[in-house]
Amino acid sequence: MAADRGTILSWLADLSAAIVTDADDLNDVSTRIAAGPDLDAAVFASEALSLMRVIAESVDEPSDFDRLLQPVTASGATADAIAILLGMGLAVAGCRPDWPSRPMARRARSRVASAGQVAALAIDQLGGDGADLYAWLTNVTATAVRVISDLEADAAPLIKVSTGISLPSTVLAYQLYGDASRANSLVDIAGSATPLVMPVLFDALAS
Image 1: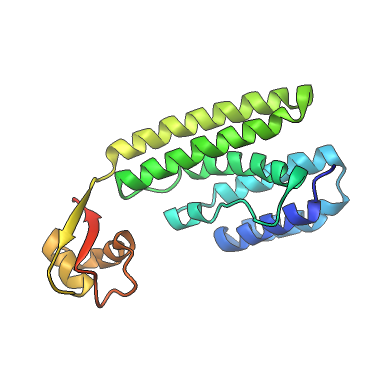
Image 2: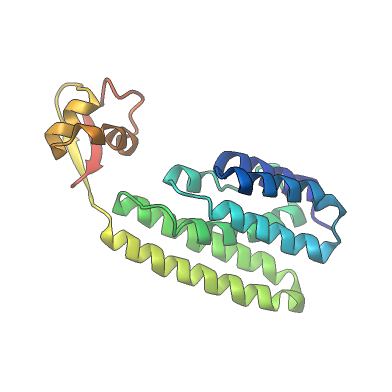
């Protein structure tokens, strides 16, 4: 059973709209996606990998990395094809953010390694035709895992902060770091719903 090109192209289009911020890159991706249905199978596979790489190389923030997910509607050969694209995409994307904390970097590394394993299993279904792709993807995954491990070593550990009362993030950022401008990152790490009223117990960067 062949993969559903429409599902793959729609998924790539959604990711590019959410992640790619450079106007020229976004226009190029949109044009190439529109031409996707008319490509022959081999060219389409190569083009899909190339488009995934453009999207992955546009990842700048942890939130962009988190958007790289397998669509729930994909199944069978389509899910396998997307798993291969996702394995490569996460490996490239995982090396790009400046991971603010060690736990976040560890979670990213785990996702990259897991996606690489799933992608390798999907490539196995291709038999001998997938040998080069298998070798390339496993190498990319292993390299990404090493790079993210290095990024993790440079990231700050997390600490538990207990305040007893809810305070604005700017006040807490100044108390913790002497810098009120770090309030936004404090909110992100803590997972607070609002910067004005922070939880009384939350995670924060140690430095």
